[in-house]
Amino acid sequence: MANVWSANANFKDGQLALCGIPAQQLAAEFGTPTFFLDEKDFRDRAAAWSRALNDSFGKDAGTVYYAGKAFICVEVARWVEQAGIGLDVCTGGELAVALAAKFPPSKIQVHGNNKSVAEITRAVEIGVATIVVDSLFEIERIAAAAKKAGKVQAVLLRLTPGIEAHTHESIATAHEDVKFGFSIASGAAWEAVLAVRKHSEIELRGFHGHIGSQILSMDAFEVAADRLIALLGQYRDEFGAELPELDLGGGYGISYLPTDEPLSPSVAIGALAVAVHAACKKYNLGVPKISIEPGRAIVGPAMFTLYEVGTTKNVVLESGATRNYVSVDGGMSDNIRTSLYGAEYIAVIANRTSTSESRSSRVVGKHCETGDIVIRNIDLPGDISPGDLLAVPATGAYGRSMASNYNHVARPPVVAVIDGKARVILRRESEADLLGLDV
Image (cartoon, rainbow, N blue to C red; front, side, top):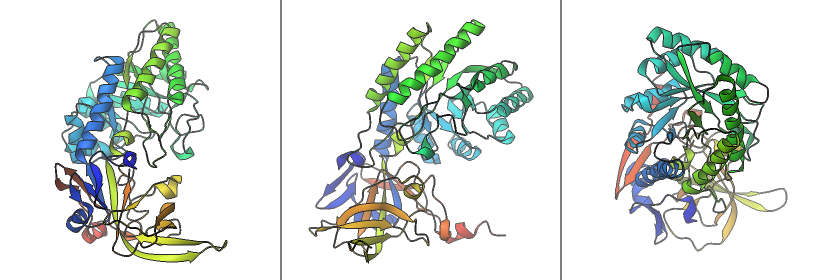
């Protein structure tokens, strides 16, 4: 099961350890539930994607933007800057985190399908590198903000290339019936091109496409690249100039289960380079600067969640079979993906070895909700009991980011671990935090 854990997680004498620190020690010091982040693994993954882009497209390639929506906090934003890559944000809140970390605005890209006037104004005023335009209304808002600031704002147009990526409906973003971007097939994309060109305060740098998340094959990326580059060719034919940039988004999958086979950065970007060069040759274009947006692929495998088992309950099913319900001290408030997407995870007892026979089990949380399920179906040792520690790997992406205070449960902390040392980078919420907004 090594492929689902971060590089510096291992098992010794039946106990999970991270960077040499046993799970029991981590739980004793930081409590549960807690997200533990392998700092070196995060940094190494960020470097690997940057290296793959440069190796495949040359040192003058575009930018690797870390997709902050996967997980962002001030300390992680600092790591991203230290890695020499950019940061993609999609709300004013994510932008505020970046600025608190003193992240250079010139390396920030701003996303979002419904950016407010205030968010756009702030982005323009601080000098972000690029705003990815998602509607005709945004074109007018950006132009107005840029004119007021006395600037010319660089933008990309987010386009929907009509790709049915092989992923869950809720995280597929490039087919026609979605809220994101301008459709190429319907002509909305070209309408947006013409609208941007009316404003001297806006510089159209190129196009952007994002086809979805947790994608384990490059086929859809290759088709999307061809369709976006075809539109770059149309732009050149119409206006006599080539747009210099193309952002092909993120969505690269990771291993949640031992059977998942994600592509390495070098293989994924190598395949992308082949497709981009072929399409540029096909449409007689120079190769533009290519940018990508890995988020899950960097932080997802670098983190695991550690829970404590509170109760177990043997339930007899209608078929006569039994299932062991294992309740942990977290649940849908720290990992909504199982309920939202039907996401699948594995888990292990982290504090000991068990020789007990495995039983059909379901890992559930502490919330007053039948759908409060962390792992729907899993075989776990039959002797799992209250006080055991249960670790769930690959929770770095969208676990803490989508966490809630449902049932007024405090959100867990994030603890970074490196070189045998652990430190809190995002503290656990307290009851005072939960009550802090009451008037």
